[in-house]
Length: 179
Image 1 (cartoon, rainbow, N blue to C red):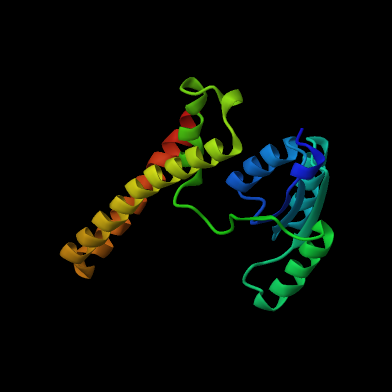
Image 2: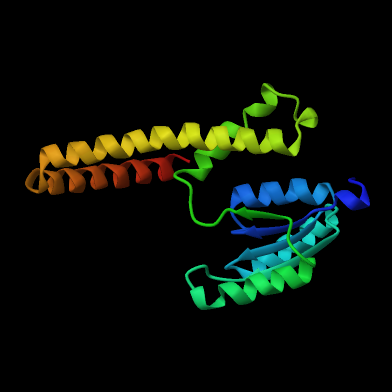
């Protein structure tokens, strides 16, 4: 538990994303004050209660769809008031290319690192490296697909897309039947 003077006032935007939730749990364990912002109010309330149990000094929530620009200032003001200022902001809204793949690879890290020895900064660096590593591969796939689409053209590309969709449906059905 940090000393009373080390407690941070942390605003987490996109708090219900997997990475934000994992980071919030780490911060809660250190006794920080947290204010969570996301679209799903029910999930936010459950998460806030969980973080309080995990050791957060305080937890507040603000329900906000980030596309609702008119409410941004009000939610920010509410966070500042609830936290009595803000020291740190984690912005984790939106989507990463493949969060499941990133979390899958992060699952291997306990085999290579002593997680108890990691600091918060170490954990954030590991998350960033995993996001860049997985994201850059996905970016390469997207670039290759766009080049292939340009080479094939619309006349050939549409039938290929239909065939690919049918193959995916059949494979999905086979997997469901086998499991």
